[in-house]
Length: 341
Image (cartoon, rainbow, N blue to C red; front, top):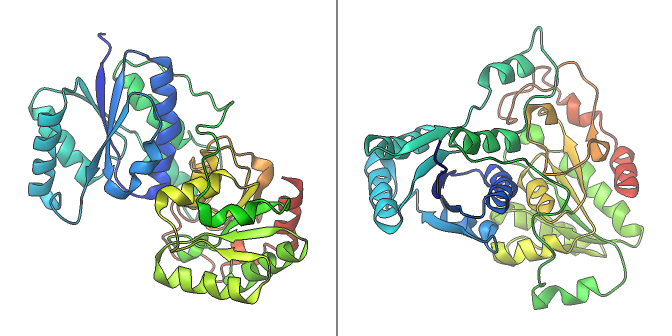
C-alpha cells in the first residue's frame, strides 16, 4: 500500500478528546518524516497543535460559517482548495465528521474512521452483568486509524509531548516562591464526574495550609466566579479562570508540579506536558480508555463500587441515585495521593 503523504485529521469537540489526539499525531509525524498532517477542529483549540513539526491546523467555526450540512460542504471546499490531501482520518465518527468525510469519499479520497468500541463500552457500563475490564485506550484507537491508512506508528509515551512553556508575565511572582505549585480543576462537563465542591474546597484549603501555592482552573463565567470566591477566601490560592488566553493557560499548566483534576479536559492538558495528575473518578472509569497520556493508575482516586462505571462520559443519571462513587471518596484519600504522586 502506498503511504499517504498528507493526511487530513477530523476531530471536533470536546477539548479533552481533541487533546488526546495530540500525542498520537506527534508520534505519527516523528515516525513518518515524509508525512504532513492537517488537523481540522474547533478554532479555539489551535494552541494544542502549535510547535509540532509538519502539523498544520485549519480552524472550523461550527456555530457560524461551518454550521450544518451546508457549512460542512463549505468547509470541505475550503480544505480541498487549500491543501492537497492523499487520505482522510476521521477521529471523531459523529454526524458532523461523517458528513465532511463523505464529501471527500465521493471525490475519491481514501478514508478511515475510528472504531469507538461501542459494544464493549456498553458491556462495561451496563447496570446488570457488567464486564469490567480495561478496553483499548482512545490513544490507541486514534493510532489504529492511521494504520488503516497504511501509516505505521507505535505509541511511545516515554517523554512528554511538549516541554515547559514561557509563563505569562502576570504569573511570574507565583512561581518564584520555592513552594510546590499545584493546579486544581474541580469542574467537569457533567455533574456525575465532579467531586462535591464543598469537599473539593476543603481539599484546597488543606493543601494551601501546607504551604503549597494553589492555582485554580475552570471555564466560563459561572466557574470563574466560584473559583474567584475560593481565591478571595483562602490565602495562597489564586484563580486562573477567565484571566488568560487558552495558550497562556497551557503555559501555566506546563509549569505545574501537580494537577488535581476530575476525568476532564485539564487532566489531558496537563498530561501533554508530563505533569503528574491526581485524577478523581466517579461515574466514569479509566477502563473506558480515557486516561491521560502516560498517567499512572496509582495516582487515580476512585471508590470500589460494583455499579461503576455507569456511563462512558458521565452524562447519565446515577444508578443508585446517591452519587456514592464520589461521596465515598474522602478528602484524605485525595490529599494522600497528592503527597505520594
